[in-house]
Length: 478
Image 1 (tube, rainbow, N blue to C red):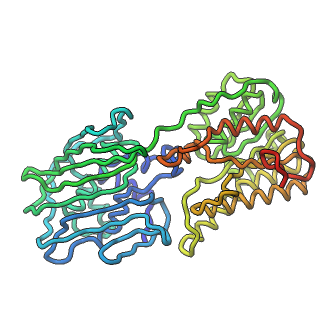
Image 2 (cartoon, one colour):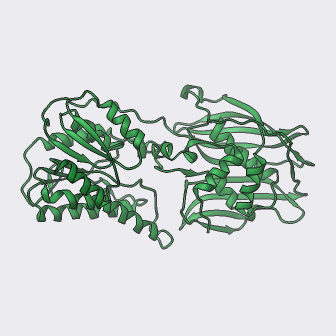
Image 3 (cartoon, one colour):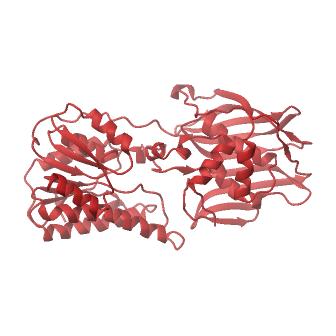
């Protein structure tokens, strides 16, 4: 079993000089489809390294590594070796595949120079139009010796030969140089000609060969020392899309003046869109967020001067004490929008992953059930649950998400029978263009969340359904 911690990411970044924010900045990573920091692919490869090291009197002549899916912190992965191939698995799902080829010869140690080699502090941010075939980069590279020694000790690796150093450099190349900040490392193929010794620093050159319609980049590179060429090969990486900017034109009016709304998970995505739609109709929105303070403050600043008002309140929607404090401070709202939900990783349902499935369902369910239980008994207008079209389409990689959305829909229907004064609405949005879907494949056919938010507000302005029922937008009774 292998499991990675935040301390591992910090040590890897220090050793390799790869400080890409997807791995090192939780606030940055929250704005990506992953919703959390991603483990360096090359760090995953290091976890396989003891099984890749050559047998006696042989050396690595070729190394191929494919990073099939992202690795995440604090997840217990399985490490498997079969027929010369080493894999990291999440249950039966392949996350990483590594294979080394060997030939006769002796593995030579790397001789480090005495001086530290300067490296980038921040990942390169190339203009999108410049990331095209022919773009090149070059430089000098040497890992940080002290941090590298600590990293190898942490990973149980005793010798730092050229193939290992080249692997670390490839992470630096993709994450810091080419393509830089927006990189998602995908594949490494590298060959090592016979050499007598490997002296640091490495002199490297890289050139972008191709960029396909889904922004998969292929780069050729060479590594050399003062004695000549020591390695050459290719790196492939996806270029992650640029952040999404809010562009939907929301209707402005004072139709909801004097009304208050509590929106959970209000700082980003559909929650932010609903908050915009309500404030621009004159409502006062108590906007809940848990960790995305910067996004919440940016949202509030963008709504300054609108007909309505936004009041930010940080807290865990699953915490009864937080919800009760809100009820005491503001009283019962006119609208309760239950939108908060944890980031949604892909999980296959099987014995190795079921504990994480159960944990996710419990956590996500509590983020709906807790505010619902606190506010619904005293409300008179609308309780809105943000569900998902996935309850109908049943995508196979999201069993935990489908399960929790189905469960909270059932909870809302029963709550509608117990507390009959407010009206109840279930919204099942299709795929939306948000941070969570902003990926090379995810943006296809994704709908602007402003469309759903505006349709929801229009429904809140019309007569409610019969008491004791929960309506499904558009207006189907469950």
